[in-house]
Amino acid sequence: MSALLELREVRAGYGGITALHGLSLSVAAGQVVALLGPNGAGKTTTLKVAAGVHPVEAGRLLMGGRDVTGANPRDLARAGVCLIPEGRGVFPNLSVRDNLLMMTFTGRSREEVEEVAFARFPILARRASQAAGTMSGGEQQMLALARGLATDPAVLLLDELSMGLAPLIVAELYEQVAEIARQGVAVLVVEQFAAAVLDIADHAAVLVRGRIERHGDPDEALRAELSDLYLGSAR
Image (cartoon, rainbow, N blue to C red):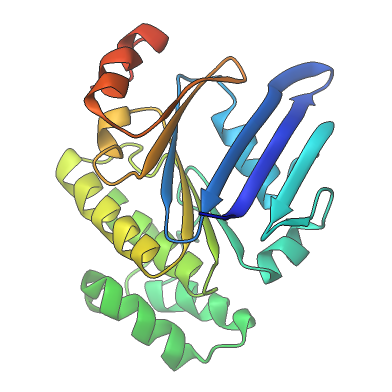
């Protein structure tokens, strides 16, 4: 299976402190890859590098086999890379409808953006006139996903989708993520809590102190090793 997104021997850091020590990771179209690890492992840095919003000190970033190391993040976004950061990234004082309206920069009409969003997340249609910041955390995360999907991404990068949400809501959101992947999107999901994502992941990698310590199928052997690799994550 050929990689749509690939990080090859990437080193990256902050002010002389190395966060990623030669990380290699790839995601194919239609695949969900879970990047697991404790706080401070370098997971968010990995997503930022993949989206072009954090510089690479060494190594390469490839998309569809093409070297895009150092590319402008806007160019990567136009090429189909969509990052949904931790904290959901919606505009709390704007209505759901106006949050979606901002995605018409992609060239789609308001009607098209809303049709896709409301079909995938019917609750958003019922909240269309409501200020996004007054919705529940799960509904805000649905809006963040809907906004991202309005760009019709080839690569979807998700940072801590489960943050602060009830397990039932998290399971519902990840069912949607699995469906997105089935439509051919390459999905890289960063999670601290393994149980939230492993049921839908095709591949998993465990990042500890900037290095991938374990990777493979999300089978029972990997799950059993998680608590040894880092504490507090395999719940």
